[in-house]
Amino acid sequence: MKILVINAGSSSLKFSFFEMKKQQVLADGVIERIGQEGTICKYVKAGCEAVVGKAESNNYRGALNEMVKFLMHEEYGVIASIDEIQAIGHRVVHGGEYVSRPVLIDNKVKGIIKSCFELAPLHNPPNYMGIVACEEIFPNIKQVGVFDTAFHQSIPKHAFLYGLPHDLYEYDGIRRYGFHGTSHRYIARKYAETLHKKKDEVNIISVHLGNGCSMTAVKNGKSIDTSMGFTPLEGLVMGTRCGDIDPAIVFHLMEHKGYSRNEIDKLLNKKSGLLGLAGIETSDMRDILKAIEKGNEKAVAALDVYCYRIKKYVGAYTAVIEGVEALVFTAGIGENVPLVRTKVCEGLRDIGYEIDEGKNSKNEIIISTESSRSKIMVIPTHEDLEIARDTLQVLIDEKLFQ
Ligand code: ADP
Image 1 (tube, rainbow, N blue to C red):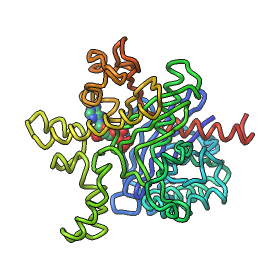
Image 2: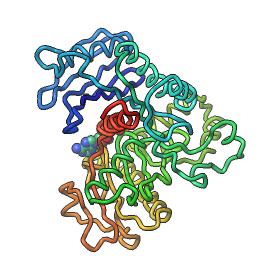
Image 3: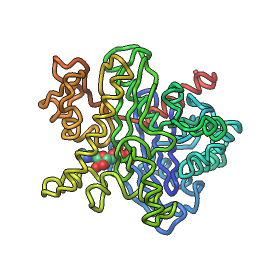
Image 4: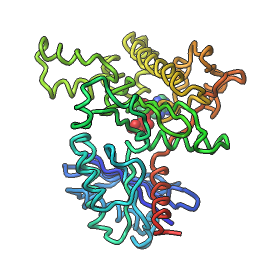
């Protein structure tokens, strides 16, 4: 059984191709700058050097055709015919309140994705176009949608409602949706596998620290709260996003600094976070750490703010879960930066978390001391594999595969 996973973004299309028996990646890649000059395709066959080539793709169809050329290439291809692709799993960002699990894509599901364009204007339209292009190119292959928001549909009302007039929720859908759900769900599942627990007995705080950052409180295997909200701007301080701020700052910037709507959007989404606080050109954590080594005080403050915000959420989620078994770090920064984990866990022994610096510095799986009440762990995330597994499960549930 071979499954293709597609993540169609505004100008790029990422793909991973899995063999499901061993749950292995056979090949993956990305087509970048779709519809612009200088479209390029990067392709990696598992265990081989990356191949980078120019591509001709004005749209997602073109990008998918480039992908097929690579997958079927004489020298570094992994299939002889597209018939070997048995299903396609799509990452879709927003499913609103309509979708709480992975689903087989049909006209109704496509309608749902379209109805959420307004809620995720940068993500849902390209996700949708990727699906339509796949339907055109692979008309006989079943397609499944795996939604970032789905895992968080179990969040109770008291945690998803904002303190705004109720009509704004009822008629305009303004509420906490949460994102990164596929990653948080993968972490909950992997935690259960690693510690031989049942899925519905998982009580953890999942801390996803990549370019975007979010935390989720998982109780009895379900998301009961998460830091991202109506959009992925809320919550933790991120690479370039501000996370939680006083909304009145927006009025102040408009009234006293003459900012337009678009300028505020750019400021909060692209110019803030680690990049804005450190005042350097990049939001890459490796560059922030280098700047700290060189004595850049703003970079020191950026890291302090970043870690302090995570620590505050650890406190909050410890309170709401009541009986946290593990605090789990994941994604680029969570998996690779011991200093961040140290700073987050500083002084948390009384609420149940004590880090073992020897284990932490080696990025071991369990990095807490023997006497720590809750475990502290590092589990690498694998969203694409989760999407491939979900896709297979939907086919089994729909009796399309035995
Ligand atoms: P995305 O959200 O795009 O999937 P990633 O999970 O790849 O992001 O995380 C990107 C972040 O992880 C960047 O800030 C990058 O600097 C950081 N990162 C990745 N690897 C390392 C590493 N070995 N050391 C320090 N930071 C790292």
